[in-house]
Image (tube, rainbow, N blue to C red):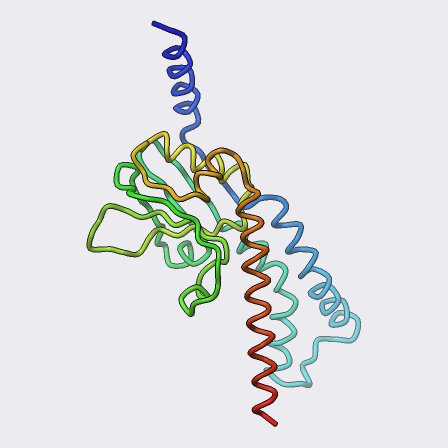
Length: 217
């Protein structure tokens, strides 16, 4: 047995020890979204406790008050619902919607055909999905829809590990350039593409708004 064989066996043993692998929303996602949503919810709640819940404004006023107060708790619950589980045989992806309807998304490693990363919201279909998406396509010819993972809530390290573990289980998977970079531990191309796509989308929306205002007049 040569040195290369020893390294390969050691690597396989280390990878096998990783299963089951569980990834949850990263701490940074909780911090960022809490900074955005918490002050607004807490201010409204404080004002409501100080001045009284606005029952005099009718059902709509009361509902609005409670909805705003629960924005932050809802975001925490929404983030907590994200989970990726890699077992010895398959990948399981859970979200708030899948938990709500008791329907988890699952694909076996042996059935994975290709993986790509899509970063965009240009198309109408894109706007219904996450901005950063890890698309996992199966070999089932009757289903063209991939298992799509929202990358944004998860840590970079978890995403890198997940791609490597999937590829370890099925080395014949086709991957695009961004997935290859992610597999190699390089997240920079994904971030730079995201910045460019965000800028393009903002410019398009600004131009559309200008034309809308012109024709409105």
